[in-house]
Length: 372
Ligand SMILES: Cc1cc2nc3c(=O)[nH]c(=O)nc-3n(C[C@H](O)[C@H](O)[C@H](O)COP(=O)(O)O)c2cc1C
Image (cartoon, rainbow, N blue to C red):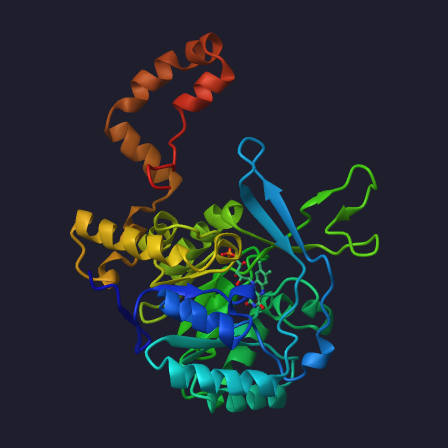
C-alpha cells in the first residue's frame, strides 16, 4: 500500500512524524527513527543562544490509569533544546545528506526581535532542512522570556513573527499552536496571513500533574517547588481532535494541518487524518513505547485504507469533517427521524427507574474499537 503523501509540495514517505521533543533530541535518535521507518521528524526546538536554556530535574510527571497502571497523561516542564546552534546546524546538514528522502523539519523559536528570527531562519535554512515549524506554543519556562506560548496567545504576534520568517524563508513554514487559548482559529489564521503554509496543533496543555500528600508539594518537585507544565499523552487527544477539526473548518484549503496530541496507535492517527490532518506527529507516545511503534502505525493505516477502499492517504484527509453540525441541527434530525416522541414520553420514568450509571451507559457512545 502506498502511504506517501505530498504536503505543501513536500513528498512525505508516510504521514508519521516524530513530534518536536525528546524523540528528536539529536541527529543520532532522528537517524534511528528514519531507519525504523518514520516518514519524517520535527527536531527539538532550537534557538540562537542555547546557554540561556537551563533544564531542571525531575522535569516529567506521569498520570496512570487507576485500573491498569497504563500512562494516560504526562506533564513536562522541559525547555527547548539546550544544545548549541552550531552543533544543530552540522547535524541538520548531516541528516539531510544521509537521509535525503526523509523529511526533516526544523522547529525554531526566538525572542521577540525581527533580526533574531530572521538570522535563525537563514542559518537553519542553509543546512537543507525541508520546512520550518515555528514554536509559538511551549507553555512554560520560555514564556518568562516572552517566547513560545507567550507569542502564540496573541494573534497579532503570530502574524508579525510568521511574516518575519516567511520574508526570508524559501521553504514551507508551519506554525505550531498552543491549546491554552479560547479560540485556536484566531492565532492560526493570523499566522496564515503572515504567510504560513501549515498549522501544527496542538502543543501541550497547561497542567499540574498532582500533589504529593506526604510532603504537600506539587509535582514534579524541584528542590521543593514546581511550576505548571505542559500536559500530553492520551488524555489530551480528544481536545486535540476538537481543535484540529475546528482548524479544518476554518483554514483555507491550501493550508495543511499537522495533527498532534496523544497519538500512540494507527487508530488515533487515522482519527486526526479524518478530521483534517495530512500529517501527524507523535512525541510522548514515542517516549513511552519507543520508535518501533511505527510498524503498527503503518500497518494499521494500510489495513484501514484497504478495508475502506482508500487508494491514497490524501483521500482520508478531512473525510469526517462534513459530519459536524450544530446542536440545533442534531435535534432537528432526531425529530425528523421521529425518535424524540418516544424518548420524551418515557424520559421521566426512565430516570426514576434506572440507576444513574445505567442511564449514563444508555446515553453514551464508546470511542473504543478493537484496535484502539
Ligand atoms: C518532554 C517533552 C518535550 C517537548 N518539547 C517540545 C519542544 O521542544 N518543542 C515543541 O514544539 N514541542 C515540544 N513538546 C510538545 C510535543 O511536541 C507535542 O506537541 C505534545 O507533547 C503533544 O503531543 P504528544 O501527546 O504526542 O506528546 C514536548 C513534549 C514533551 C512531552
